Length: 420
Image 1 (cartoon, rainbow, N blue to C red):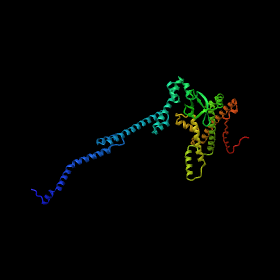
Image 2: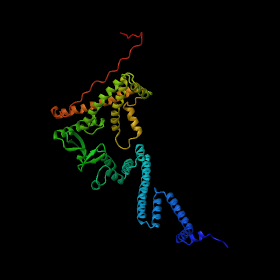
Image 3: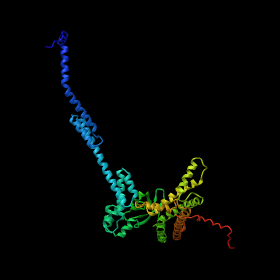
Image 4: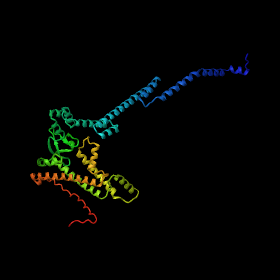
């Protein structure tokens, strides 16, 4: 039989000791439950850590957890976040799909620039605009032998459904002339600064915009009123006396011929400067851009100023103006290809990697074409002045040009003498 010391028996009979034993017994009994709760809490933590809160499914999973815990406020918050994020994901998916659709359509139409822009942008409005351009281009390629195509083209040109209905059935030839602004009355109008512009006005009072190839209100082109009757008389008379010359210059009216001739005069001044730069020894040829870069580096590290660097930079800068006019001659629609631009660059003598002789020949050819335009204008103007009187032509004066730069005479070989 076990025997306990007197002190142990005395202590064991004290209330405090008895309470301690009871508490210890409780803790021992609760340990398994507490361990299960801790394990459950750890599992919940691991489950929460595994949730991808950057996805709609993850946010819904998190909302479900809070709802199971009775935390309705957080459950509702994460459910709303899941719906918002799902909307964003769906919108991005639609944008990517539309982006590829537009880019593929542009490539199929041969519009490489528009295809590249479509793949680079994330702006849905810009994509819609490109899609409309591609669609318009595709419609423009369809033959005008279908009434539905004609109506679609007329809508693209700015006519309302009511106006299209009022036109009735029109032939492919009439539709083509209408769409290219060759019908209607050629009228002279003025802008806010008094500048005069000739425009085609159709039966509905709309004017043809050469840039957009659409019919618009005169005010949309900055035109405020018709020009004085005397100017209109010049336009009408010039149209009668200079039809052949204006057709040769690819314009439909005297005012447009005047604008083209004035622009030709300005281009000739640029071309003469380009000729002087080339003859002055600026870098040309296959390695021209490399040589130009090396010369720039030389100036940057302290070598003497190189005037040919400035000449080349000015040449390239002014060549871009000629290229822009060359492209305008091609037409400014969306169908202009990269090849067209390269051709314009070459035709304007803007590619300094070509040999000097080739560049000079290209500039000479373009200068003569510009001079011919000025000559045609002066011919039509003189015929008009003969009918109306020189005093009525002061708004449109003759355009004078400097003579074409003369080529330097080739030096004779040593010992060679010309017969006298």
